View 1 (spheres, one colour):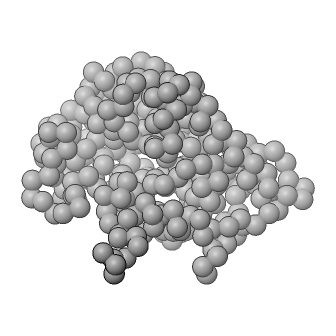
View 2: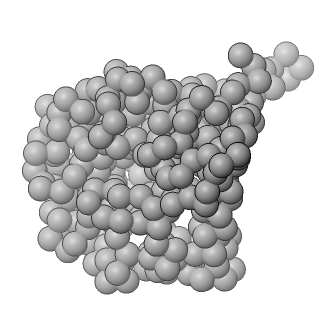
Length: 296
């Protein structure tokens, strides 16, 4: 329609517009080549660029995990049963299992237990996937009924495991603080690939959330990160790590785990180039003041 808003509430487009409005100040005099390693939940990774919590990939989730392991990246995985998770963990990848908000609490607890018993480094819940574009009473994903957990139910899931627990779908200071209060180790800032319309770009919220939760709480920026340059902007503004999904899918399908690993390494190389140019010796010393917004 002629009078329709050009973005039509497309959160992916809104996110891209915001990321492209951010520009970076150079501080290369006296800089040195940086260290981009990340310690996440007590495990060291070669890069702060993680996989997105994907599911049902054609080459197999074990191939996806091998690509992450080869690149030295943390591997988030989404839906899939315990047998699939065991195969993923058998690759040697360091895996964070994200569980859907199933209506059946026993389903949730069983999947959390499977992750803990088989060597995942953390577990979490994709809370945002309990609500679709419309608020349908009966929301189903892959044949499973979903339910938005109450705060007390979510607190119980966090307490049910010894693993660090991370909530995917927090998109405000309020939600991040609530997750911190109930014992979560961190949150993934996400609008679930535009499932939430008109969502604030996650990177835009990072500075306020980081100030609210402090330095130790894990913040993973999700949604629209396309390359190492986007990753740098998110990290500079307060992210602990960034997750990438769509850019990994084609390399994985066409070239297998090696292609996916090379994509992650290339993105990390772009990130490190930006770190050099901004005088950032490591992830802990990226100065947020290097980021400027053209629209400010």
